[in-house]
Amino acid sequence: MTNDSDSSKDQFLNPLGRFRGEFTPENLAFDANLQEFANRVSILCSLETGGKISPVAAYEEIKQLWAQLETSKENLLEQDED
Image (tube, rainbow, N blue to C red; front, top):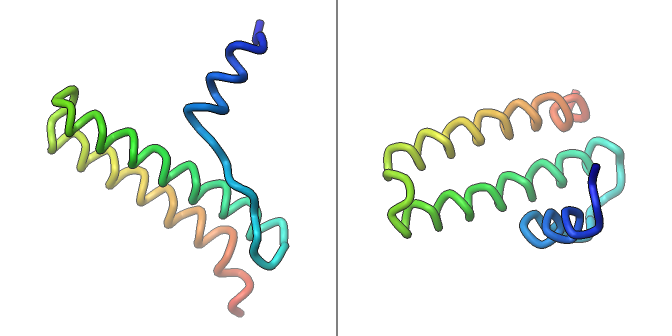
């Protein structure tokens, strides 16, 4: 069961900024994905800098996150360019 403490911790560790662009459901979803990508990259960089994970492990994880973000872009934004 989730409590307020877990919710507060999640909001602290994974903050989302307000969306200020041209509103479409696709743009909103991609913005959320982009913010999550940036947050996870920041955490990975901190872990690598602190010696908790290797540079290679950080690189591989970021590479995987980038591929997910590219897929998100293709599915959400490229449809508008037709």
